Image (tube, rainbow, N blue to C red; front, side, top):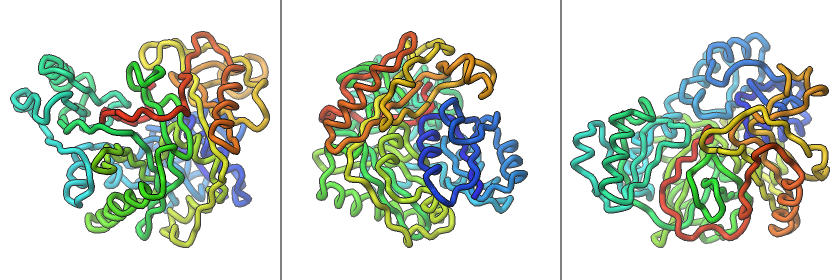
Amino acid sequence: MKVFIIGGGGREHAIAWKLRQSPKLTELYCAPGNAGIAALAECVPLAAEDTKALTAFAAEKKMDLVVIGPEVPLAMGLTDMLQAKKIRVFGPNKKCAQLEASKAFTKSFLERHGIPTAKYKAFCKKEELLENIGLFGFPMVLKADGLAAGKGVILAATAKEAEEAIEEMMGKRVFGAAGDTVIVEECLRGTEASMLCFVDDRTIVPMEPAQDYKRIFDEDKGPNTGGMGAYSPSLIFDQDLEDEIREKILAPTHEGFRKDGLDFRGVLFIGLMITEEGPKVIEFNNRFGDPETQSILPRLESDLLEIFLAVAGNGLAMHELRWSARRAVCVVLAAGGYPGTYVNGKAISGLDKVDADVLVFHAGTRFAGDGPAAAGTGGIVTAGGRVLGVTALGATHEEARAKAYENAARIHFEGVQYRKDVGLPPNLDSVNEWDSADEAE
């Protein structure tokens, strides 16, 4: 089968790596890809947002399946365009993509179907929002409604900070059209967690739980990023919590899709806050999380291509997911200065010194020349804020964590930075500032 992956980050590298294990796969393409993906697939120089060109290429090559990684092409309706050409797609259509592209859409959905979440109110006028400062107390959670590259959430500790944030969002429009509507939420406290689910019209199947790290520095300090590491399974999940999530969140969500006519086929990423009152939804995303995917897929024993085809064909109920008992820890190596200003083009060394059983997923890399042909001469250089994800598996969580850090230390590029606490017990007093769009570079 011919498969075409859209995207060029660590998530897409992990997907390509897993798809390569399927005996059904004959040809694999990726647009735009990166230096790591190039070893697994033919990289096509098309941007993930160039929906017309991507559709034309998929039709020309007669692709059997297109897998859409990032959220932007989903929100732009790439799935709909491909389906109009009778091409199978793994990824929700434009109508369903509103669940990530509009926080107001999602909050309304959650409220309408009785799914636990924070109290909220949406504002379209700056003046009205200014009159409601402190609506749910402080810190005041302010969220740009649309896609804001992982930077659209602000926690204002005081009324003055709230005024400044509102001016930034709705006055200066620092998030562009994404901030035309701003959501004010009740501030939830508890422990953040992620649950990814395969979804089609007939069923919703959760994957093994994962835990990620959003802030740039240890102990959850510093600004939010696209994700600085992850591990699976999550240390905070137990059977009682999973049962509660299935009953109070997964079941009513899937039923809500049916009632609202949302033909969702793909991955539903659920951002959760585990509060004293139980699990509550922070947000929905329409695709695999990054870097959660880099810790989840290495533990998947089932054929990923078969799962993708089942979801696209509405046959997920016929497949049972099999998972390894091994633990996985992924440590993200980021560019100096990230998530602020950073410089690309830094030479990467040490990739050849990584243990054979350790996975290095490329997130922001390219060949030093203009393409794959330059690989043997110029090597691989940085090309993004999050550069690499080092994933190790172990019989125990501690073994996986130690192996991941041991190997991460062997890789170097100028300015490299990474958290040293990935895999330690999670922060038990987080607040709902999560904006998990993974294009935060």
